[in-house]
Amino acid sequence: MRLEISCQDRLGITQDVLDILVKYNIDLEGIEIHSAGKIFLSFPNIEFSEFQHLMPEIRKLSGVDDVKTTPFMPIERERNQLTAILETLPDPVFSIDTKGKIIMTNDAVLSSLEISDEALMGTEIGEYVKGFNFTKWLDSKKIDPQSQKVKFIEQDYLADIFPVFVPEANKSEILAGAVIMLKSEIRLSQQFTVFHQAPDDSFQHMHANSSAMKKVVREAKKLAESEGTILIFGESGTGKELLARSCHNASRRAEHPYIRYNCHLEQPNDNELFGNEHSTDNSLFAKANGGTLYLDEIANLNESLQRKLLKVIQEGIEVSNAEGERTAADVRLVVSTQHDLGQLVEDGKFNEELYYRLNVLPLVLPALRDRKQDIIPLAETFIKQHSTKLGKRPAKLSKSCVDFLMSYPWPGNVRQLDNALYRAISILEGKELNKENIQLPSCATTVSYVSDDFEGTLDDEVKRFEKDLLRRLYPSYPSTRQLAKKLGLSHTAIANKLREYGINRKTVKI
Image 1 (cartoon, one colour):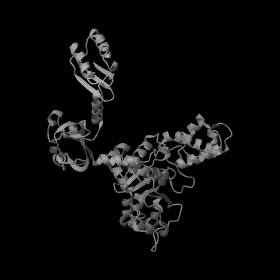
Image 2: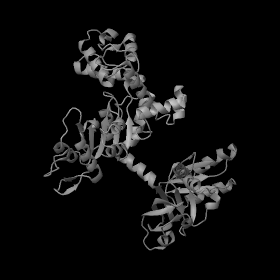
Image 3: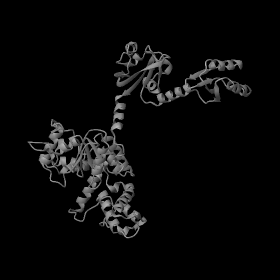
Image 4: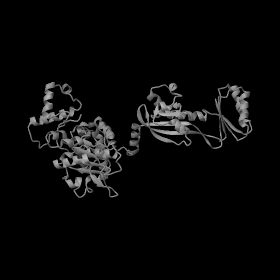
């Protein structure tokens, strides 16, 4: 049982309260006296008959304003709060006395050392945390908080060391020991990343209802935190530029420039990309300094520009900073392509060393036909966007329209869906989108799509489909026996086909 007594600051009032407890033979377990006019008592539960006399008798004391029960003592609450914090902290925490002996730890310490709490108590902290003389620090005349690099279980940690002082009545302080909190390099890196990450979800515009897109977004979020070059593979219209910008916005460079250069639509030239012999300050690398340079359709670079890009990646490029000094450009590269760079390397059309320099952190954007769960959410988003632009109320999708959108193979991917819905919303007169409102080229509802201007034989198309299928499956079934079992063919037949199409660990990212 615990009591909270509100009282005035009167000499001897605490003794009067204790005398009443003695009168009723109550064994006092704890007492706290607060300067704010509060006395807290803790004692075993007593019979109601005794309790009903105890409370009025305390109230009769001169200077007592009120008496009531309380669920806990203030020191109990503080102690349990501290325990809760220590138990949930993933970082190892030690509390030591003035001799450097351990008097308290948390679970992170015990699990790291694989030792019991009883075995650890009273031992010297220097036995476990190396690289700082705790005894010398505790014995020094001026004890200030410290941040030191130390060793714990043979690994590097940052130790935040805080002295613990107990105040005295004359406002001086007495050293009571210290608290040491350890942070590993991994934890520091995680916290630094969280501190610098963009406040909003940078990938919120990447619709990821399908498992294929969820996997891409999950990987992209992790790769965005690093500084390596990201290479995005994907068919035309899959959203490679949106993914590149999302990676930039989720990186530590989010507040710095994001420069996009389309190597496919624009005619790449030396001066625009790298500057000239007189100055590099107008180059894309100078404009993107501190941020991200996104090169779309990297496969379109000619042989000369490929060599120069490789040289810049290897040696860097100097640009002028705000003070006019020449410093190395700090640029993160993100590149994309719809082509098979590995095959282009095999065909001698793309620099092999540049390919390996770019293919550091690859991401593969699936075609829209391979992420069917995203089609309707994307369609609804586009309908809302276009309706707002056109000043219309967003239309609803009829069942026939939903079935049609889901069955269409979308050779132009997300871009084709966006354009088709923009046209439909522009001319729509009713409140509902039907299948008839969507104007799309006649297209077989299969995974493969052959354009009207296809040139070649049936055998050519079968081989193209066969090669595409094998390249898709190879990363998941990288041995010929696994792939043969998956496709129901012989080991020899699969080995021959992989050899024929140049599919191997060198040309396909595993």
